[in-house]
Image (cartoon, rainbow, N blue to C red):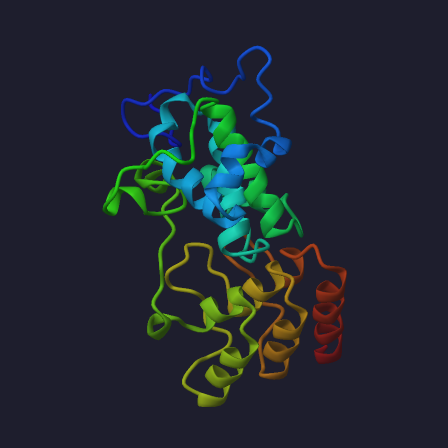
Length: 252
């Protein structure tokens, strides 16, 4: 059975993951080589690496794809800001955990590590060589093949709702939605099978300000999600957990 991280017909072989004898091009230090200097800025080299990755998926292992996915997200989005997927979403959990593990890593560090990993997959890669042009060369987070493995839905601004704003820590928009009085702050996300409320999302993302705003607006911290978890049980942030507990006690 094909790996869920690879397209049909692809393998998870690691033949491209080892450096040839005496070749240290997989190290971050290699970014100071002449070819790197000629390629321009680190950001430009990162984009070239992402474009080049589309042709390397057959020699990449699942672990390498997760490694690259996490660093691409760190560069393009920043620190992990989404709730942890459910226990049954194995692939989603792996992706989330890989991204979350980067913590506060800087975009520049993530770019360097991403480029180094691509070099490890293809030690002979020359950033100065042109990649394929057109729609296939600039999709997802590293080419169409890898993009198909980790499809990230792009939500238009006008289609966003309170759940999206909570995940983004966009307190201004959360405030506007609450003030509009067109939304029940205790409703559960119909697009999510987890049965979570906006308070669950804000708690899971560890956004204390959003949690406090929702509580002030009447969000109920005693509502459980599909797995029977309270908002305070889906967060690892002590401050968020304490705020939820105090609010619950105050309502008792």
